[in-house]
Image (tube, rainbow, N blue to C red):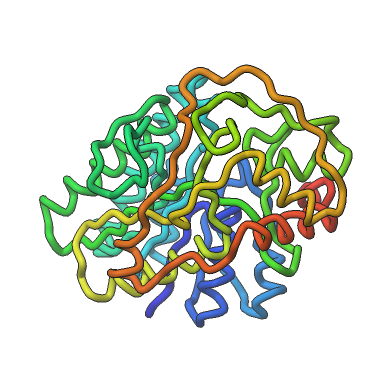
Length: 339
């Protein structure tokens, strides 16, 4: 396999995937504008793997910069993570999300086309299912969205499908993640959100550390086993390994195919709180407040297509997710050092 370009490779999922790729012998080239990520993550990936990573600080919306990068390397494939990803922010700033995520992808695809690179692994999301009416969620469920972030993912998926229909030499893996959590077992790389965390796991670890006073649980009266919302949480290392499996699948010229990446098991918020309490050895203070509008009672996936086609399944359980997230948080209470 020639070099693989990883856009957004300094981010949370991107850095873990770069690590798995480097350890498997792939020549990794990263492009990232560092708007919501840190160069330190790339340096630590190099340290853990013992492999060098070529890094370009550039924006995928910058067509000239992307052209220079493609001219310098012969890429076999692209793994595309780069994008803005906060649901709430996307509601407040939809144009920024449409420009960055959709326009950036068009610029990237144009560069790929010019240089005849037609293999892509795309970081999609379970948000493309909107509010599914039943669980488990399968890849053939109707697609819809409830916020601008999700809309960018669905528009990009549609672009990829149209691209393959126009030229069947394109091979594209659409990976629909559910809820990535955890960190690498070394505690050297992990999730480093800007400001107050929006996602459950980093919020819980901040509470466990004492940086935040308590966890607010949105809704305790859902029709679930303990009244709190149920989601499919997947260890970020399992997710990274899934990208490696998808890259290998591209060598078989599979066309354009979507895969759910999740555990196939639902975990409630209170179950997550209890698992983190076991990991850190202390109680996690929390209060239950009103539901948030639009939140579903439970969303979890059927990952059997990924198992059948990619030979991949999630291996790490909830206790491992929490133990690894807690180790990262203890070693890096303020996240990565600021560049």
